[in-house]
Length: 270
Image 1: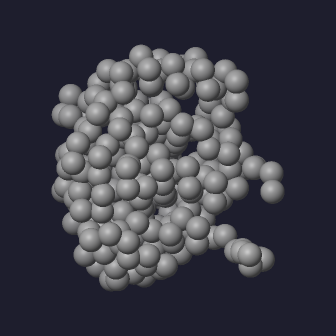
Image 2: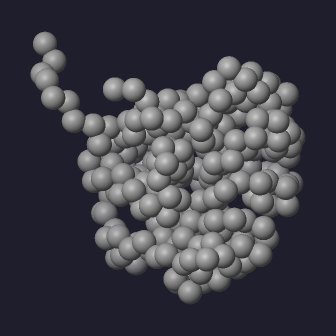
């Protein structure tokens, strides 16, 4: 099988493999893409939480992006954990040089266990400088609340927050509804021309580590392969839900999802 698209992942690592760059690589590969990486941070974490974060120097982040893209031009770029203003500015500088248009930003702020992955100054820089440069942002409800200063309690609040992000210069928004307590999950996709609500039944499991990283990488892969952005979101949501249903149950905390859920092995291992 030949990869259908080349995806550059700009994000931090997760030593347990469930989220971050590791989840991104698995997702892109499973969906038929070729994954490249620019590491922003090294984390020590497992399913119970994050123990430590070691930052990669901003200049090195920029060099990874530029040197990789000079040789293999990405069809799409997924951006995850950006922990400091300096790293965000270095990423913007590099993006201006490589000029790839299909850029998806997952504004990662807090790990599943509650560990903060970005400082307040960096959040302001991300809000003022980066979100308007990307094609889609995929915040969950807490992240959307931080970016818009709106309390989100229902679907109407999600739509209101998405409209605020639109006014801030974001081209397309997908607000993920996984943090709501309701039985059916609603994700809100909005741009200047359309509003789409994706509705799915909530899957009862604690094993959802890395779902945000996986979703944004899946969207990037589908979009880079030529699907519309709306369809890419729809297919990515289906892929994530399918991967959650596997319920791997690895680890003692919030376990990972099954990134191999879409792959069928046609011959037995000998």
